[in-house]
Image (cartoon, rainbow, N blue to C red; front, side):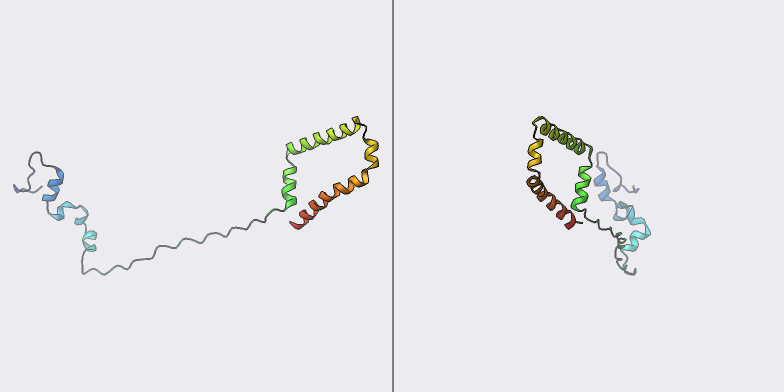
Length: 132
């Protein structure tokens, strides 16, 4: 600190009190630099605030084509668990028809049965073509 008795630290004096006693120029380290003093100089040319740098343009994302009903259906049907369960139920249906001796009954009613089964199939085909 200074050599005068006024600036000399007294025992038990805190640093905050000592910092207040020093002149303003000695309190702040940045005040000694030329840049800091130039910022408060009234003769200095005024700085024009610059606009922030614009962000680079985002790359345009390709719009994904929405998958149709048939694509989604085929993707789900190709899973192994779906294939195994379908084969299991087909085997069970054939075994039930054979064990119950329903072959002659199915031969007698195959035309109305085919008409009833064709209704959901027609809607499935129509929905598949509509969403292509």
